[in-house]
Each structure stands twice: as structure tokens, then as C-alpha cells.
Picture 1: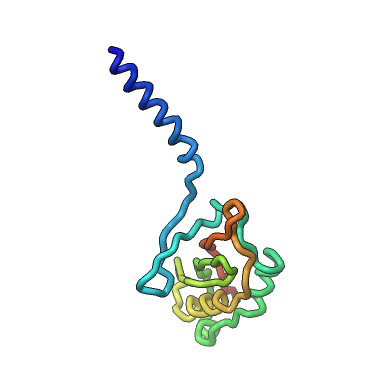
Picture 2: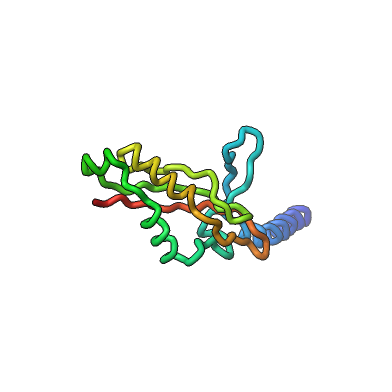
Length: 146
């Protein structure tokens, strides 16, 4: 009986020691950015202490997209509209990398244009966990409307 009580107390103490660590777990994924050899941990946008930000904030981002985006000729000619949902990584230096289309607009030329616009972005302010800069995945829709 005493052995079982000691085992139960030991298990409870172990659980109490692990719970604070579990509360600090963040959503982190591992990606292979353009390289076949190295992998890096990437934090999700909503799970960092300081989120990365485009220079000029949200308004600056919208202005940049509207100024940089060029409607592809055949998509314009055929009245193709839609939204391209893209993801990219803001690195620890603020550079945008690993641009990908999550959900396309149904026209490949719109997908390519969305990737071009995102790849042309200037450096962002970096995301942070605590005081440490970390790479962060950002998901951004690019709209194409006539």
C-alpha cells in the first residue's frame, strides 16, 4: 500500500513538473525552404509573441499589393477573377522566402502573379518569441477583381 502511494505521489509530481512546459508549447512546423539539405522550424503567425509586420502596417501592405499587382493579359481578356491564397515565411532577417500557393484562383497566370507580388515585397519587421527573432509563416490572400 505504501509503495502504491509513493508511486502515485511520484507520478503526480512528474505531471506537475511537465504541465508548465506543455503550456509553453507553440505551433511550430518544420519546412525545407528551397534546399534539399536543411530544415528549419517555422512558427505560425498567431502563436508568436510579436507578429511580423509589413513596413507601413496593414495599409502599407494593401497599397504595395495594389501598386505592384499586374493583371495577367489573358485572365483580363477572359474576365477571370478570383483570390489566390498564398503562404510565405518571414525569416529572422525580415526577408520573404518559400512563397507557395495554398489555394489557387483557378487560373495559373493569377497564381504566378500572386507569387511574383509576394516575392517582390521588401523586408518585414521580424516575428519574435520572447526576445528572440524567429521565422514565421504568414498566410495572405491576393485578390484579382475586374
